[in-house]
Image (cartoon, rainbow, N blue to C red):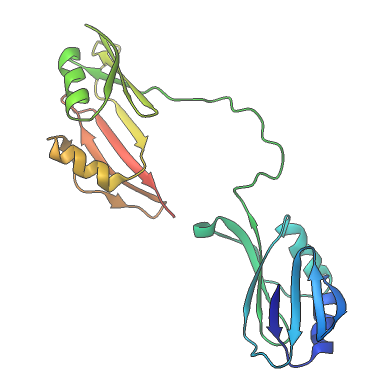
Length: 226
């Protein structure tokens, strides 16, 4: 419920009813506009230039309905930092009204996930030495090992260390998503990891840094951000 400053209650009532689709009703001390649980009370004594946000279940349908009724809303845009698809419209008194829908909420029942987990394979010349390095320097735990393979776990991530052969030659890259890139950078650097520079924030929403193992395989650790 929100008190909204207006200069002409009749004009505002017509806009909220005819353009936005609100229900207009009398109140003990004035006029109210209601739409679902949202309630606005028009107040000629309050100052205008307010900003009001409404959350809707279907922002595209709301946008189309407002345009069909003669309104002039802005285009729908994604606002990443609050994970909303939103549009803006001004009422006759210049109050800014935002209508938004979370795009974290699926529009339909999600299908079962086919892909569950990835298992990068990194070739090494010295499997025992590589296992020790991943354990003591990079903070992984040994899930399984033998002379030709090492299965290394850290939290939800598993890496497979394999013996370098003609089939598995060269170096292997891996990208690991992490909770806090700067904290991990400080940890690995303190343990003597071959860190290739400080964490860098990229325009595509990832802050990451790169580490090389003893065989120059490159693992990039990245933290998503908005």
